[in-house]
Amino acid sequence: MPGHHDRGVRRRPAIVAISGVAMLASLAGACLATSRAIEPGTADGPLPPPPPSGPTAPAVGRPRSFTVVATGDIAPAAAAAPGAPGAPGGRLDYRRPLRPFLTLIGGADLAICHLATPLPPTSSPAAAELAGLGYDTCSTASDHALAAGADGVTRTLEGLDRAGLRHTGTARGAAEAAAPAIVNVKGVRVAQLSYAADPARSRPHRTQPWLANRMDPRRIVAAARRAKRAGARVVIVSLHWGREHRRAATPAQIALARRLLAAEDVDLIVGHGAGVVQPFGRAVGGKYVAYGLGHLLTAPRGGADATADETGAGPGNGAGAHNEGIVARFTFTRGGGGWRVTRVEYVPTYADPGPPPRVLELTTELADPRLTAARRAFLANVLGRTSRTVRGRGVVPILTGARPGPIDGVIPSHGRPGN
Image (cartoon, rainbow, N blue to C red; front, side, top):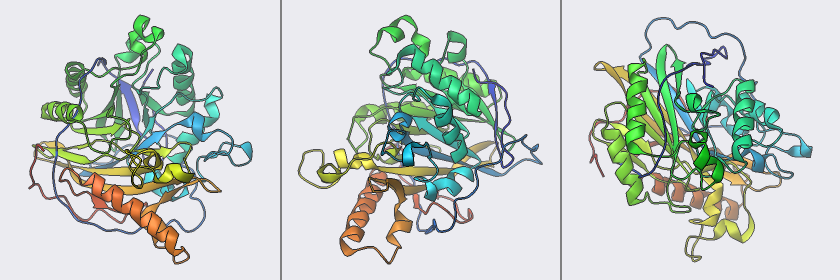
């Protein structure tokens, strides 16, 4: 159960349980803002060390800003399978295939992962690997959250607890389900909530509804309100939603996002579930939704699958897009008595089936002069497709590399909010 916890010298957050419930369905979003690009990154050199463990130093003064990094789906069971990323020689190692992203994830003030599936039976090594990447907390509500039944939920949460990772979205009991996490980020209390459009279709969920949070806009808004009353200054909602392999946000997603962002107590929505990258949107008041971050660490698909589209007629929109994703980075800035997102960035990713299997950071990969013309054209196509998708609803987040430079600008507040 989420509890007060400190971990990591660099900025490991403390998390306290508060009241807030979760469940049932409806869906979707809002839109807009502008900004510009490009901060190329590099992934050269040795692997950075894992984030250190130990008590968090107390915050000094009041921070003016903090960063939140959110990544695409992680399916630990698939990632740990023989021949998949993270299993060289049959040994779990998530850091090597995700090498380009260690600085980005580990350097965030708050790093959020999304577990699309339960942890495998040997959950402790998998959870420890996730913690070693630099994550602080994971959303666990998904359409596969109950794939291993109640035992899978318990195993997953116990593994995360042992690794010192916080979690929200699934629970071992009603009390835990009513306790979303509040994280101390540089002295700012940030709440995370997690819900799925359809986490169940199973007997365990019918008899134990607390096992996985099912989306219900009224419950989400009520939980966000309770989090704010308990001291949270920012509420981030993780939603597992959307139509599989559909890059465009569905009308249901747009409607739900619009409704949630209109609520005073919801500050940011981070989406997963379609298995592909989806757009960013912006609502009135400068609140953002990332409709879908695609996949980060799952078993990549290769061959003809990597070039099929939704209709079977063109490159990379359907099954092949399973390999594509983005890492989103949001900067929250204090002003006017509250906190709001002032900078939105994205780092495009591609799960290369190899050998060896690895997750590419596309801006860095395309800077490699050793690429063949065919390889360069393929990766440029993936990057272009991803960038067009994330801007598909009018928001223009900053394209950056996995090692972004210092925060030196903000997103103008003008645009066509509400689209």
